[in-house]
Figure 1 (tube, rainbow, N blue to C red):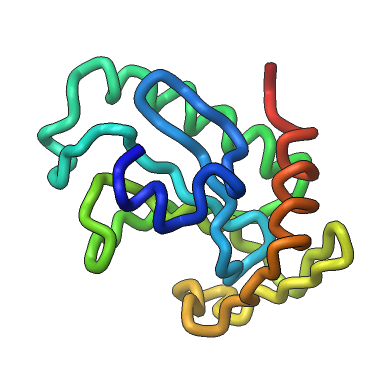
Figure 2 (cartoon, helix red, strand yellow):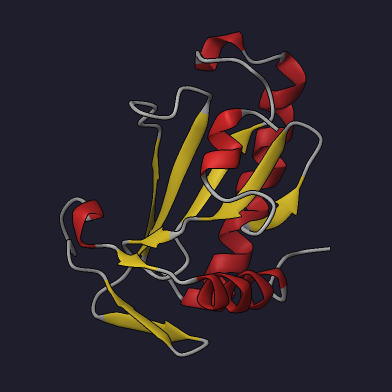
Length: 143
């Protein structure tokens, strides 16, 4: 796995593994269910990904949206491709909602609603919370 994937806590944060992509729990949760959708490639530019990765992206996004709709009941969803500190192709997936959502004893308000996500106000997860939430979200993942 590339260094970006490792920096987001792989393998402890791994929720789903595809041929070209992984879905990780974001250790800093600006909203409950915030994820990282990361390319397994060493590509540092979106346009450098192989064609097969683009085809598989549709399945990964559909799975993310199905799982988060059930697990978090989001009202909107944001896909942010920031790539400022972590250079490999990845998206920050931020489910959006009014108020707060809770799972596994972790409550996270959407402090930015209805405007841009308040990434700086994220809840930092401890190792036990990561483990519990990874299991929680895996339980909603499509087969």
